[in-house]
Length: 195
Image 1 (cartoon, rainbow, N blue to C red):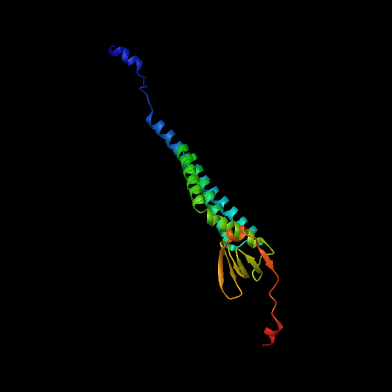
Image 2: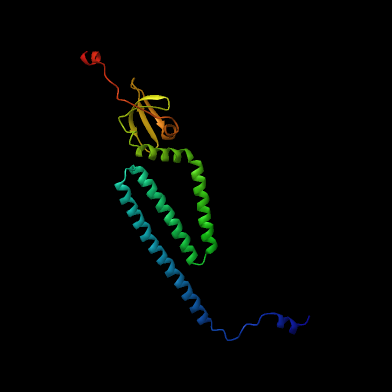
């Protein structure tokens, strides 16, 4: 192989390259991407804040516990920002990073969900119990092997005080999975009343 045949195989570059024009074109392309990324960030920020505000207003009219409302609001905010950051990476031309970012966060979320399944179960059961009109604070119940008065219900646990004054703290998931008996209020004997 001689030198002339090697030169024919190699790509030829033009001698008159206007390096300033190429730099200007690339600079404008990068500036356009940065402006679009800033625009995506701004629109995402506005959307996340407005959706969260509307959600909180809607939940304020419902019977949901404040802790549950804040938890769902935080999850919505987190999910919104994941979408915004992935969109910013895509606009900047880092499609692979965008996909990896979204996929990694999905795996982290699945790991957290599986490791916190008992907490999530208690939270969903708590929502169910709080929304139940028959199961309220002050009711006498038999649930999860305990008979007494419901003292408090929160998102993760319910407190029941028996007739001897013992306080039982029962996870909501255990209550939701057991048979609940709503009892009539305890009647006070006339002899006890007169003494």
